[in-house]
Length: 247
Image (spheres, helix red, strand yellow):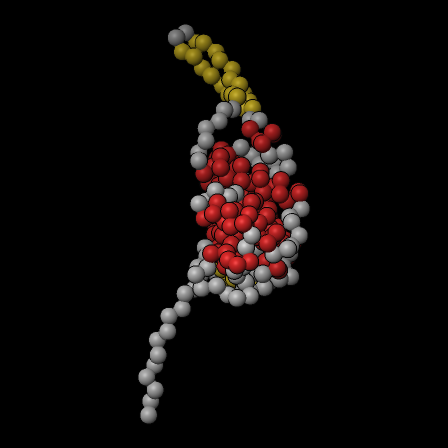
């Protein structure tokens, strides 16, 4: 006698981390394709790809941290070995988690909280400063904040007509805002800026993921053909740069 199949429901947490990281990688490689051509049109397209890559790099970082936070603190179907039960939470932790739910914590504050609750080493100070600069750049780009540059032009009157020739452009936007990362200003971002942003995110990923061995992300990129990349517990920034062909 054949058994009647039984349909069971499973709640599966979904994260966009892998999509965001793959998009950041693909867009960085497209920016590199444009950079090699050096014409005005291609350099403008390079900048647009670079902006997209930078934004998606930051989104990858934020979505990874939100996913880990979900599994640790917010899951409705928690894994016993992962979830921190309500009875084990301090008053201070409960207060901070309310801020997280209301989207009032920065990505760095979320990282610090997760590492502290899992009794892990904090990020090194240099990485923290680079994340702050990346977050600052992300805010300028995402919110489209206006800023000023100084143009130096030579003006010559010929009768009733004024002829202006651009001689130089002074863009000091990033000198005080990005002392470590040396990001260019939002209107002049290029593949090097996008690579810097992605490497910052990879530094955090390779620091955190080995401590959460139940998380097994696979990144699928499409630039130059479909490729699958396994983020293993022994992955380093250097090996990922090579694997993602970002050298």
